[in-house]
Length: 231
Image (cartoon, rainbow, N blue to C red; front, side, top):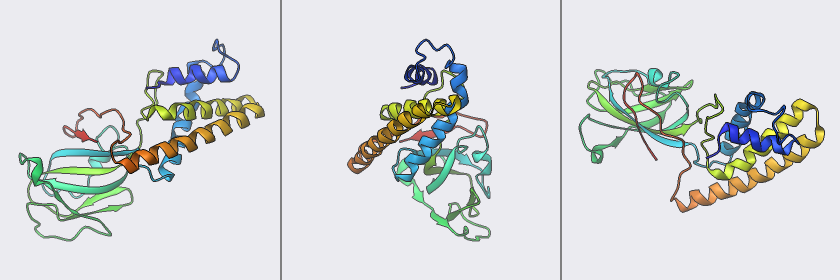
């Protein structure tokens, strides 16, 4: 798996600085997140499932109206771009008891007092709204998630290795922009686009086989509660 430091070294070689005299890791850190966001956005347009995860929230308290707390920075749903399905079960029950809640609806159904189940949910202004429920529930959220930000040289570019060339070529192109070198901008920009086309085709084939998902590193537990992630 490619790290930021690895990507910096590969990009430096492309822009005639293999010794990394000016294109060092600290310099490259100013570009990597923009490149990562560019690549993430491009891949989402292909409708691939590269960013899909299934996250289990155990023991969500009764009557919680939204999942905003879980979506807050540092919590399990912080990187959620789009929820797709939510299933529920009573804590302690085996996985065979998962049941799908209706959604996403325009609004969750207004249940008063509600029951020992999650009837429905909605996705409104980037917030998951829940119908009323009267007992703690385990919730399973399947959705699209942004990749964790690249904040230091050891941070991993947690996509398939097929994305490495796309990432490093686009990084070299961005360095070319900063250095005012139009030849680097065009050459490596074109290379990035070509590599992106190949990557999109490869991911589409993987999706068709239904045998693989490109995922991220597992999230850790957090203050809101333990989190389980499956793929």
